[in-house]
Length: 429
Image (tube, rainbow, N blue to C red):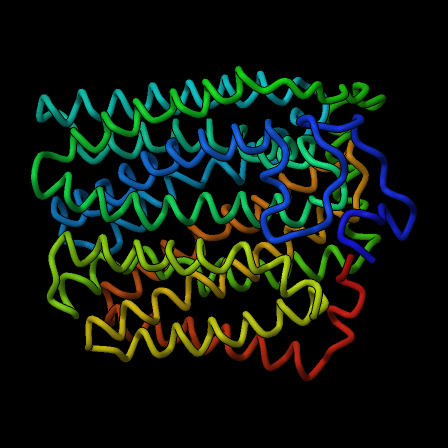
Protein backbone atom coordinates (compact mmCIF):
# COMPACT_ATOMS: atom_id res chain seq x y z
CA UNK A 1 0.00 0.00 0.00
CA UNK A 2 1.31 3.44 -0.91
CA UNK A 3 2.47 5.59 1.98
CA UNK A 4 -0.25 7.95 3.13
CA UNK A 5 -3.21 5.85 1.95
CA UNK A 6 -3.97 4.44 5.39
CA UNK A 7 -5.05 6.37 8.46
CA UNK A 8 -5.34 5.35 12.11
CA UNK A 9 -5.37 1.60 12.62
CA UNK A 10 -5.92 0.88 8.93
CA UNK A 11 -8.83 3.26 8.33
CA UNK A 12 -8.77 5.46 5.21
CA UNK A 13 -6.70 8.57 5.75
CA UNK A 14 -8.58 11.88 5.59
CA UNK A 15 -8.32 13.59 2.23
CA UNK A 16 -6.46 16.82 1.72
CA UNK A 17 -7.98 19.88 0.12
CA UNK A 18 -8.42 19.34 -3.61
CA UNK A 19 -5.24 19.80 -5.60
CA UNK A 20 -3.05 21.37 -2.88
CA UNK A 21 -0.38 23.52 -4.40
CA UNK A 22 -2.06 23.31 -7.78
CA UNK A 23 -1.56 19.73 -8.92
CA UNK A 24 -3.19 16.31 -8.77
CA UNK A 25 -2.06 13.39 -6.58
CA UNK A 26 1.45 12.28 -7.45
CA UNK A 27 2.81 8.97 -8.62
CA UNK A 28 5.29 8.59 -5.77
CA UNK A 29 8.39 9.41 -7.83
CA UNK A 30 11.75 10.36 -6.37
CA UNK A 31 11.07 14.10 -6.90
CA UNK A 32 7.27 14.05 -7.21
CA UNK A 33 6.62 16.59 -4.43
CA UNK A 34 8.38 19.27 -6.49
CA UNK A 35 5.36 19.19 -8.79
CA UNK A 36 3.47 21.21 -6.17
CA UNK A 37 4.12 24.95 -6.53
CA UNK A 38 3.69 25.76 -2.85
CA UNK A 39 5.90 22.90 -1.68
CA UNK A 40 8.64 24.00 -4.10
CA UNK A 41 8.41 27.60 -2.86
CA UNK A 42 8.65 26.57 0.77
CA UNK A 43 11.47 24.12 0.04
CA UNK A 44 13.54 26.82 -1.70
CA UNK A 45 13.02 29.41 1.03
CA UNK A 46 13.79 26.87 3.73
CA UNK A 47 17.03 25.85 2.00
CA UNK A 48 18.36 29.41 2.13
CA UNK A 49 17.20 29.88 5.71
CA UNK A 50 18.68 26.59 6.93
CA UNK A 51 22.01 27.35 5.27
CA UNK A 52 22.05 30.45 7.48
CA UNK A 53 21.10 28.37 10.51
CA UNK A 54 24.02 25.98 9.99
CA UNK A 55 26.41 28.86 9.36
CA UNK A 56 25.23 30.15 12.76
CA UNK A 57 25.44 26.81 14.61
CA UNK A 58 28.86 25.80 13.30
CA UNK A 59 30.25 29.24 14.16
CA UNK A 60 28.65 29.12 17.60
CA UNK A 61 30.05 25.67 18.47
CA UNK A 62 33.52 26.70 17.32
CA UNK A 63 33.32 30.02 19.18
CA UNK A 64 32.36 28.33 22.46
CA UNK A 65 35.10 25.71 22.05
CA UNK A 66 37.65 28.48 21.47
CA UNK A 67 36.38 30.50 24.46
CA UNK A 68 36.38 27.61 26.93
CA UNK A 69 38.46 24.78 25.46
CA UNK A 70 35.78 22.46 26.86
CA UNK A 71 33.58 19.90 25.10
CA UNK A 72 31.22 20.10 28.08
CA UNK A 73 30.48 23.78 27.36
CA UNK A 74 29.74 22.94 23.73
CA UNK A 75 27.34 20.31 25.04
CA UNK A 76 25.68 22.89 27.31
CA UNK A 77 25.07 25.17 24.33
CA UNK A 78 23.30 22.26 22.65
CA UNK A 79 21.26 21.75 25.82
CA UNK A 80 20.29 25.44 25.87
CA UNK A 81 19.15 25.18 22.26
CA UNK A 82 16.99 22.10 22.74
CA UNK A 83 16.01 22.00 26.44
CA UNK A 84 12.85 24.07 25.72
CA UNK A 85 11.58 20.98 23.92
CA UNK A 86 11.07 19.27 27.28
CA UNK A 87 8.87 22.07 28.60
CA UNK A 88 6.94 23.29 25.57
CA UNK A 89 6.86 20.71 22.79
CA UNK A 90 3.57 19.00 23.68
CA UNK A 91 1.89 22.39 24.03
CA UNK A 92 3.40 23.52 20.73
CA UNK A 93 2.06 20.43 19.00
CA UNK A 94 -1.41 21.18 20.33
CA UNK A 95 -1.17 24.75 18.99
CA UNK A 96 -0.09 23.43 15.59
CA UNK A 97 -3.32 21.43 15.44
CA UNK A 98 -5.67 24.35 16.24
CA UNK A 99 -3.96 27.57 15.03
CA UNK A 100 -3.19 28.79 11.53
CA UNK A 101 0.04 26.91 10.86
CA UNK A 102 1.40 29.42 8.37
CA UNK A 103 0.96 32.35 10.78
CA UNK A 104 2.50 30.36 13.62
CA UNK A 105 5.58 29.50 11.54
CA UNK A 106 6.07 33.11 10.39
CA UNK A 107 5.93 34.31 14.01
CA UNK A 108 8.49 31.78 15.23
CA UNK A 109 10.81 32.43 12.28
CA UNK A 110 10.76 36.16 13.09
CA UNK A 111 11.61 35.41 16.73
CA UNK A 112 14.61 33.30 15.73
CA UNK A 113 15.74 36.07 13.38
CA UNK A 114 15.77 38.51 16.31
CA UNK A 115 17.82 36.07 18.39
CA UNK A 116 20.46 35.71 15.68
CA UNK A 117 20.59 39.48 15.25
CA UNK A 118 21.09 39.95 19.01
CA UNK A 119 24.03 37.51 19.03
CA UNK A 120 25.54 39.33 16.07
CA UNK A 121 25.32 42.72 17.80
CA UNK A 122 26.71 41.44 21.11
CA UNK A 123 29.62 39.60 19.51
CA UNK A 124 30.42 42.64 17.33
CA UNK A 125 30.69 44.72 20.50
CA UNK A 126 32.76 42.07 22.28
CA UNK A 127 30.04 41.79 24.92
CA UNK A 128 28.89 38.21 24.29
CA UNK A 129 29.78 36.17 27.38
CA UNK A 130 28.74 32.58 27.98
CA UNK A 131 25.66 33.48 30.04
CA UNK A 132 24.31 35.71 27.28
CA UNK A 133 25.11 33.11 24.63
CA UNK A 134 23.20 30.47 26.59
CA UNK A 135 20.24 32.80 27.23
CA UNK A 136 19.84 33.85 23.59
CA UNK A 137 20.34 30.29 22.39
CA UNK A 138 17.59 29.15 24.78
CA UNK A 139 15.27 31.90 23.46
CA UNK A 140 15.86 30.70 19.90
CA UNK A 141 15.27 27.15 21.11
CA UNK A 142 11.85 28.13 22.47
CA UNK A 143 10.91 29.65 19.11
CA UNK A 144 12.16 26.53 17.33
CA UNK A 145 10.08 24.32 19.61
CA UNK A 146 6.89 26.11 18.58
CA UNK A 147 7.99 26.14 14.93
CA UNK A 148 8.85 22.49 14.35
CA UNK A 149 5.50 20.67 14.80
CA UNK A 150 3.69 23.26 12.68
CA UNK A 151 6.43 23.05 10.03
CA UNK A 152 6.29 19.27 9.78
CA UNK A 153 2.49 19.32 9.69
CA UNK A 154 2.24 22.01 7.00
CA UNK A 155 4.57 20.03 4.72
CA UNK A 156 1.92 17.32 4.49
CA UNK A 157 -0.79 19.96 3.94
CA UNK A 158 0.90 21.01 0.69
CA UNK A 159 0.85 17.62 -1.06
CA UNK A 160 -1.59 14.78 -1.69
CA UNK A 161 -1.41 11.63 0.50
CA UNK A 162 0.50 9.64 -2.13
CA UNK A 163 3.34 12.17 -2.02
CA UNK A 164 3.70 12.52 1.77
CA UNK A 165 6.72 10.21 1.99
CA UNK A 166 8.45 12.03 -0.85
CA UNK A 167 7.66 15.44 0.67
CA UNK A 168 9.06 14.36 4.05
CA UNK A 169 12.19 12.96 2.40
CA UNK A 170 12.76 16.07 0.26
CA UNK A 171 12.21 18.30 3.29
CA UNK A 172 14.89 16.30 5.08
CA UNK A 173 17.13 16.53 2.00
CA UNK A 174 16.79 20.32 2.01
CA UNK A 175 17.71 20.52 5.69
CA UNK A 176 20.71 18.27 5.26
CA UNK A 177 21.89 19.91 2.04
CA UNK A 178 21.93 23.09 4.12
CA UNK A 179 23.84 21.19 6.81
CA UNK A 180 26.48 20.41 4.19
CA UNK A 181 26.73 23.92 2.73
CA UNK A 182 26.25 25.88 5.97
CA UNK A 183 29.16 24.55 8.05
CA UNK A 184 31.49 24.83 5.07
CA UNK A 185 30.46 28.47 4.61
CA UNK A 186 30.60 28.96 8.37
CA UNK A 187 34.22 27.81 8.49
CA UNK A 188 35.13 30.20 5.66
CA UNK A 189 33.25 33.12 7.25
CA UNK A 190 34.77 32.61 10.70
CA UNK A 191 38.27 32.22 9.24
CA UNK A 192 37.98 35.19 6.85
CA UNK A 193 35.84 37.55 8.93
CA UNK A 194 34.29 37.10 12.37
CA UNK A 195 31.79 35.01 14.28
CA UNK A 196 29.48 38.05 14.27
CA UNK A 197 29.32 37.94 10.47
CA UNK A 198 27.99 34.38 10.67
CA UNK A 199 25.22 35.49 13.05
CA UNK A 200 24.23 38.41 10.81
CA UNK A 201 24.04 36.13 7.77
CA UNK A 202 21.74 33.80 9.67
CA UNK A 203 19.47 36.68 10.71
CA UNK A 204 19.12 37.79 7.09
CA UNK A 205 18.44 34.25 5.88
CA UNK A 206 15.16 34.02 7.80
CA UNK A 207 13.67 36.53 5.35
CA UNK A 208 13.80 33.87 2.60
CA UNK A 209 11.50 31.42 4.35
CA UNK A 210 9.16 34.17 5.59
CA UNK A 211 8.79 35.42 2.01
CA UNK A 212 8.08 31.87 0.77
CA UNK A 213 5.37 31.41 3.40
CA UNK A 214 3.71 34.67 2.40
CA UNK A 215 3.59 33.50 -1.24
CA UNK A 216 1.95 30.14 -0.48
CA UNK A 217 -1.60 29.91 -1.86
CA UNK A 218 -2.77 26.59 -0.41
CA UNK A 219 -5.62 27.05 2.06
CA UNK A 220 -5.13 24.51 4.83
CA UNK A 221 -8.27 23.52 6.77
CA UNK A 222 -8.67 24.73 10.33
CA UNK A 223 -9.13 22.04 12.95
CA UNK A 224 -11.76 22.55 15.67
CA UNK A 225 -10.59 23.63 19.10
CA UNK A 226 -10.17 20.70 21.48
CA UNK A 227 -13.36 20.09 23.49
CA UNK A 228 -11.42 19.36 26.69
CA UNK A 229 -8.86 22.16 26.44
CA UNK A 230 -5.16 22.03 25.67
CA UNK A 231 -4.31 19.57 28.45
CA UNK A 232 -6.99 17.21 27.21
CA UNK A 233 -5.62 17.64 23.71
CA UNK A 234 -2.16 16.56 24.89
CA UNK A 235 -3.52 13.66 26.95
CA UNK A 236 -5.31 12.41 23.84
CA UNK A 237 -2.10 11.99 21.83
CA UNK A 238 -0.22 10.42 24.78
CA UNK A 239 -3.06 7.94 25.20
CA UNK A 240 -3.02 7.21 21.49
CA UNK A 241 0.71 6.41 21.51
CA UNK A 242 0.36 4.21 24.60
CA UNK A 243 -2.55 2.24 23.08
CA UNK A 244 -0.87 1.86 19.69
CA UNK A 245 2.34 0.06 20.52
CA UNK A 246 3.74 0.45 17.01
CA UNK A 247 4.01 4.21 17.67
CA UNK A 248 5.47 3.73 21.15
CA UNK A 249 8.08 1.26 19.89
CA UNK A 250 9.12 3.59 17.07
CA UNK A 251 9.69 6.43 19.53
CA UNK A 252 11.78 4.18 21.81
CA UNK A 253 14.09 3.26 18.91
CA UNK A 254 14.39 6.92 17.95
CA UNK A 255 15.18 7.82 21.58
CA UNK A 256 18.12 5.41 21.72
CA UNK A 257 19.55 6.84 18.50
CA UNK A 258 18.99 10.40 19.76
CA UNK A 259 20.81 9.86 23.06
CA UNK A 260 23.68 7.60 22.02
CA UNK A 261 24.17 8.27 18.30
CA UNK A 262 23.11 11.67 16.99
CA UNK A 263 24.93 13.73 19.67
CA UNK A 264 28.25 12.77 18.05
CA UNK A 265 28.10 16.18 16.32
CA UNK A 266 28.75 17.79 19.73
CA UNK A 267 32.18 16.15 19.79
CA UNK A 268 33.13 17.07 16.22
CA UNK A 269 34.95 20.30 17.25
CA UNK A 270 37.10 18.32 19.68
CA UNK A 271 37.70 15.52 17.18
CA UNK A 272 38.69 18.01 14.47
CA UNK A 273 40.99 20.09 16.66
CA UNK A 274 42.48 17.63 19.15
CA UNK A 275 42.38 14.22 17.43
CA UNK A 276 42.57 14.91 13.69
CA UNK A 277 44.53 18.16 14.22
CA UNK A 278 42.45 20.25 11.82
CA UNK A 279 41.21 23.79 12.33
CA UNK A 280 37.85 25.47 11.83
CA UNK A 281 37.87 24.55 8.15
CA UNK A 282 38.37 20.86 8.93
CA UNK A 283 35.57 20.94 11.50
CA UNK A 284 33.28 22.59 8.96
CA UNK A 285 34.06 19.85 6.44
CA UNK A 286 33.32 17.08 8.95
CA UNK A 287 29.98 18.62 9.88
CA UNK A 288 29.30 19.39 6.24
CA UNK A 289 29.88 15.80 5.15
CA UNK A 290 27.32 14.65 7.72
CA UNK A 291 24.82 16.92 6.00
CA UNK A 292 25.94 15.87 2.53
CA UNK A 293 25.37 12.21 3.35
CA UNK A 294 21.88 12.98 4.59
CA UNK A 295 21.07 15.22 1.64
CA UNK A 296 22.23 12.71 -0.97
CA UNK A 297 20.38 9.82 0.66
CA UNK A 298 17.08 11.59 1.38
CA UNK A 299 15.50 11.39 -2.11
CA UNK A 300 16.20 7.65 -2.19
CA UNK A 301 14.10 7.00 0.91
CA UNK A 302 11.11 6.76 -1.46
CA UNK A 303 12.99 4.29 -3.67
CA UNK A 304 13.95 2.14 -0.67
CA UNK A 305 10.39 2.21 0.63
CA UNK A 306 9.20 0.49 -2.56
CA UNK A 307 11.50 -2.44 -1.80
CA UNK A 308 11.60 -2.61 1.99
CA UNK A 309 9.18 -2.06 4.82
CA UNK A 310 9.94 0.93 7.05
CA UNK A 311 10.79 -1.49 9.88
CA UNK A 312 13.51 -3.06 7.71
CA UNK A 313 14.90 0.37 6.80
CA UNK A 314 15.08 1.25 10.51
CA UNK A 315 16.93 -1.95 11.42
CA UNK A 316 19.42 -1.67 8.57
CA UNK A 317 20.21 2.01 9.17
CA UNK A 318 20.61 1.45 12.92
CA UNK A 319 23.17 -1.26 12.14
CA UNK A 320 25.05 0.93 9.66
CA UNK A 321 25.08 3.92 12.03
CA UNK A 322 26.50 1.84 14.88
CA UNK A 323 29.32 0.45 12.72
CA UNK A 324 30.10 3.87 11.20
CA UNK A 325 30.15 5.64 14.58
CA UNK A 326 32.50 3.04 16.06
CA UNK A 327 34.73 3.37 12.99
CA UNK A 328 34.71 7.16 13.22
CA UNK A 329 35.88 6.98 16.84
CA UNK A 330 38.88 4.87 15.81
CA UNK A 331 39.82 6.83 12.68
CA UNK A 332 42.90 9.04 12.70
CA UNK A 333 42.83 9.69 8.95
CA UNK A 334 40.96 12.82 7.93
CA UNK A 335 39.73 11.43 4.60
CA UNK A 336 38.37 8.31 6.32
CA UNK A 337 36.65 10.46 8.94
CA UNK A 338 34.98 12.43 6.13
CA UNK A 339 33.72 9.22 4.52
CA UNK A 340 32.35 7.95 7.83
CA UNK A 341 30.73 11.33 8.52
CA UNK A 342 28.96 10.99 5.17
CA UNK A 343 27.75 7.48 6.08
CA UNK A 344 26.54 8.65 9.51
CA UNK A 345 24.56 11.47 7.95
CA UNK A 346 22.91 9.09 5.47
CA UNK A 347 22.11 6.41 8.05
CA UNK A 348 20.61 8.71 10.68
CA UNK A 349 18.59 10.56 8.02
CA UNK A 350 17.04 7.36 6.68
CA UNK A 351 16.26 6.11 10.18
CA UNK A 352 14.57 9.34 11.29
CA UNK A 353 12.73 9.78 7.96
CA UNK A 354 11.30 6.26 8.20
CA UNK A 355 10.04 6.92 11.73
CA UNK A 356 8.67 10.34 10.74
CA UNK A 357 6.83 8.97 7.72
CA UNK A 358 5.10 6.14 9.57
CA UNK A 359 3.98 8.47 12.36
CA UNK A 360 2.51 11.06 9.96
CA UNK A 361 0.97 8.61 7.51
CA UNK A 362 -0.88 6.55 10.12
CA UNK A 363 -2.54 9.30 12.16
CA UNK A 364 -5.43 11.60 11.26
CA UNK A 365 -4.62 15.09 9.99
CA UNK A 366 -5.93 16.72 13.16
CA UNK A 367 -3.34 14.78 15.20
CA UNK A 368 -0.29 15.37 13.03
CA UNK A 369 0.90 18.45 14.89
CA UNK A 370 0.77 16.60 18.19
CA UNK A 371 2.40 13.41 16.88
CA UNK A 372 5.16 15.59 15.46
CA UNK A 373 5.54 17.26 18.86
CA UNK A 374 6.27 13.83 20.33
CA UNK A 375 8.65 13.14 17.46
CA UNK A 376 10.59 16.33 18.15
CA UNK A 377 10.52 15.63 21.90
CA UNK A 378 12.31 12.36 21.29
CA UNK A 379 14.41 13.31 18.26
CA UNK A 380 15.51 16.83 19.24
CA UNK A 381 14.69 16.85 22.95
CA UNK A 382 16.66 13.74 23.88
CA UNK A 383 19.67 14.71 21.75
CA UNK A 384 20.91 17.46 24.13
CA UNK A 385 20.72 14.98 27.00
CA UNK A 386 23.05 12.75 25.05
CA UNK A 387 25.13 15.75 23.99
CA UNK A 388 25.62 16.93 27.55
CA UNK A 389 26.43 13.39 28.70
CA UNK A 390 28.91 12.87 25.86
CA UNK A 391 30.52 16.26 26.47
CA UNK A 392 31.14 15.65 30.17
CA UNK A 393 32.37 12.10 29.57
CA UNK A 394 34.69 13.32 26.80
CA UNK A 395 36.23 15.85 29.20
CA UNK A 396 36.73 13.10 31.79
CA UNK A 397 37.92 10.37 29.42
CA UNK A 398 38.29 11.17 25.71
CA UNK A 399 36.07 11.99 22.75
CA UNK A 400 37.05 8.84 20.79
CA UNK A 401 36.23 6.51 23.69
CA UNK A 402 32.81 8.14 24.20
CA UNK A 403 32.00 7.91 20.49
CA UNK A 404 33.03 4.26 20.48
CA UNK A 405 30.65 3.56 23.36
CA UNK A 406 27.82 5.33 21.54
CA UNK A 407 28.47 3.32 18.39
CA UNK A 408 28.38 0.06 20.35
CA UNK A 409 25.02 1.00 21.91
CA UNK A 410 23.53 1.70 18.45
CA UNK A 411 24.99 -1.55 17.18
CA UNK A 412 23.52 -3.48 20.11
CA UNK A 413 20.10 -1.92 19.49
CA UNK A 414 20.15 -2.93 15.83
CA UNK A 415 21.13 -6.51 16.66
CA UNK A 416 18.29 -6.66 19.19
CA UNK A 417 15.83 -5.45 16.53
CA UNK A 418 16.99 -8.18 14.15
CA UNK A 419 16.77 -10.78 16.94
CA UNK A 420 13.23 -9.71 17.92
CA UNK A 421 11.49 -8.73 14.65
CA UNK A 422 8.07 -8.59 16.31
CA UNK A 423 9.08 -5.33 18.05
CA UNK A 424 8.69 -3.36 14.81
CA UNK A 425 6.42 -5.75 12.93
CA UNK A 426 3.47 -3.34 12.88
CA UNK A 427 5.59 -0.23 12.23
CA UNK A 428 4.75 0.21 8.56
CA UNK A 429 2.39 2.28 6.44
